[in-house]
Length: 201
Image (spheres, rainbow, N blue to C red):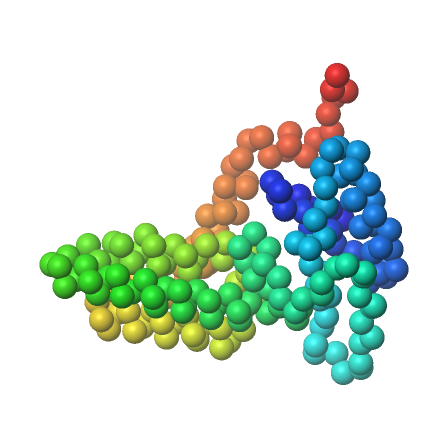
């Protein structure tokens, strides 16, 4: 299966078809050449997703020539490991947002009130935490969720985050429901999936 978002292309090959990876890559290269494009293998990566809960040993397929194999990959801004863990994403979010909190400290020192600081926190820090949460929350483990909850509790104590704010799980659930509601009410959704009624010139 091939997924394309702007200039990002993702090729997904099932384990039963692992021997076709080289052929599929060549198909993409040929398509790019036909359409006056070039496939930059130096910017391309391969990741093999495995279920590490299985007890028996898994023999990974050989690496493809010219293609770097990685342990984690970023898909549309979401970092995933080869065991479908989002721990690197959670760690990055907490660390990068912690750096932003220094800016809030400076704003407070210059007289910005707590209500305004909390508005900035919601619009920047919380928005970054909830970004695409419907897509990755299911991969978050207990420790990942505890790390985010601890981060939010610390910001409640210093006044950057409102104590009336819903829990992180509730916020993610609301984000998931909002996205699902938009999908249900999107009138053109069905027409996007329908086959064309005529051939393009």
